[in-house]
Length: 318
Image (tube, rainbow, N blue to C red):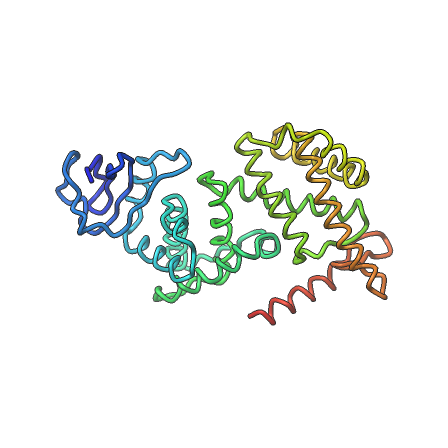
């Protein structure tokens, strides 16, 4: 491999055997090295391949600003946690996690406590990433003299969610999380029920929404689906279509993007599925409650039962 740019003693940008640019890290890898020279491959510890059109120079410079010990700690913790090879080799994700951990360690040293928003939403909307965040934090804490607080698991989970968007910061992910919460509220208010946020169908709906956000962000919405399919959905689920139209207005307001008719139709199909699931569960209750809770006399949703059940499930799982 040929060196293209030296950032510091431990980080270089190089050209691999296929002509692609890669970021290499390793103790002393860039010491007295110059562009055009061959890389001392015996010193390479990590190889990162920039993706999603990211500027490799920018990523390499940001990696160079983080202590190599922190990067090593994060990557080792990622592997121990069982994150896949693609995630461990993602310069963007490793950079985001390493930068966050470096900041968290410094805040801990200075006695600064952070309160992270959306803890409940992250736990309910992204259970897989939240579980990974908890495991990742445990692996990181096992390598630190002073462990980080439990709340850091929420932020780590958000970084893992954000990796699916490749936006480089958490702004879009926080927006997505808040909007998903609003969308679920719209469904509950329209149908007069409470959704079980841990049910399989709600999980599928949230997965659909996450990919919808990606399509909107990448300007690749569903469009041009066969007309008979779209018309069949509209005919089969008229109430769900009206609910999906309300959701569409929210999305267009929050995301500043037009939502296609095809996306609205598929939203309606998912709305019909999650509400049918909740109504079946509600019909099986003898106290008038719905899947996730029940309504109070003034029409508000009482989540106390749902929250207690979900917390009990989590305690049993630990």
